[in-house]
Image (cartoon, rainbow, N blue to C red):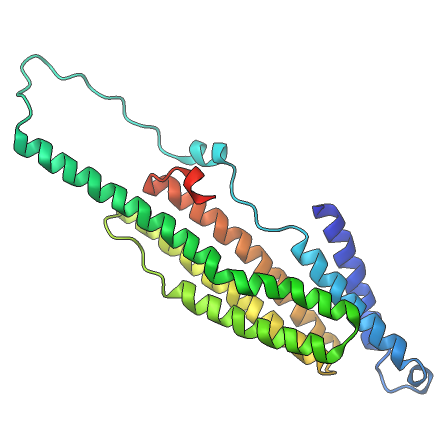
Length: 244
């Protein structure tokens, strides 16, 4: 599927450029404006299909386990070790409870990232469908709604708080993942803005190129976002099965 997406995306970009070129105000192209419109929107639909054909995939659980630090072997208590007091046992239980709460907060953060980005992710696919019809108004409207959804996703993710009680290393990893996720949706937002321009008749090669670059960067960013949060989960001590 990934190979098919790359091929379709490449052919779509070529078709899109051909359509854009046919809008140049040259006499030979004026009689072919309808074909230019079809090529432009058909190419746009194919480019978007190529981008979404490889959806973000979480890092395999085995890979996450491989990156996690190995546990330190427990050292058997010597006969002379003093017995644990009731107070010490209570402290350990409190620490365990705090650790579990931190893990739950991290899993909830991950789910909030997916929930926040959902409307933007759906808008990418909806724009491909609209562009395929060749309806400029519908494509513009979907791109406009997508631009708003992607902007809201970026802001919502940026506002997420790193769970309390993490080590400095784990907190830094989570913060890095949040920043990557927020930035990914900024690029998707910019890609939608350029798509609005294309649908509105501004098919200059520079605009088309910026649109494709932004959408590609956003797609890569979403995949990296998921990967970084899965990597952070190993530092937090979260079982990756809880993140599905």
